Image (cartoon, rainbow, N blue to C red; front, side, top):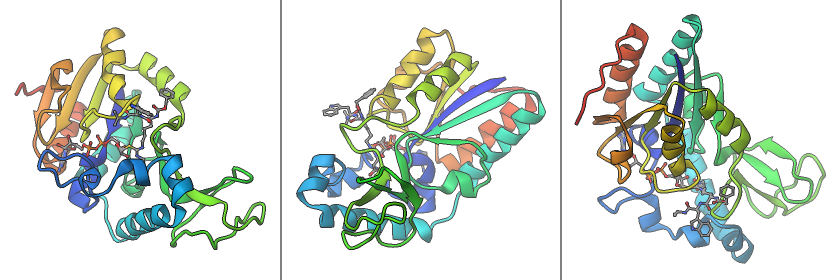
Length: 242
Ligand code: BV8
């Protein structure tokens, strides 16, 4: 079995990291303006404000722990490999909770909060402290040219070719903890369907794109994902229709 898994902020919600668009209107983008804080134009206009936004999220991440859903996906990756199968894990998240739970291959299509990129030399380095205009690039020595290594709105997501090839190769497409709002990630389910691939949504509640999924499982990821992984590794994927 070759499974393509796409995760979003919902898989990290129970680890205490914020989601973006919860229906309750409590998400990050309900409290902060993405056009000011998650676009290159916003960063150019007010770098200190954008750095402060990501410094707060980086601090929050460093005190967070992976939850049972992250650990279950790490088990699925290992279990499928043992069975001669394969799992591709693509995440929209910029946290490192999949890696800390033991996932070996994670495609961060929207970048990584614990890395900084230099606008002068394009060098990328681990960065776990606060980041600001006074910081110096360890590769080229320039000061004040570092930014969070994340993909902002209007910027090209990373590894789209890798993602497209993995979709070509998959037997099953599973979206976990994503509202299916942001493109191109939100378009992956339609690409999977166009390839005749079975699709499954695992989320707290039906997303606006729920109709695009053959199977659906709803509830907190820390409960629904381990149960789904047990089914997958037990070989009897029990698709619970809503
Ligand atoms: C691109 C990184 C061209 C930074 C993010 C106008 C101008 C420019 C672009 C556009 C435009 N109009 C549209 C676009 C395209 C735009 C877009 O899609 N906009 C949307 C708003 C309409 N996209 C882009 O700009 C992308 N780039 O288009 O470049 C291009 C295109 C194709 C090919 C080549 C080039 C770049 C988008 C990336 C932006 N960066 N983040 C940061 O994190 O600060 S996006 C942001 O939303 C998040 O990072 C996240 O990755 C992404 C998706 O959000 P979700 O993960 O789905 O989270 P959300 O809160 O929405 O949903 C959580 C879900 O979990 C909910 O359904 C909830 O019910 C559920 N949940 C909650 N708790 C639990 C749970 N589930 C289970 N258990 C729980 N406990």
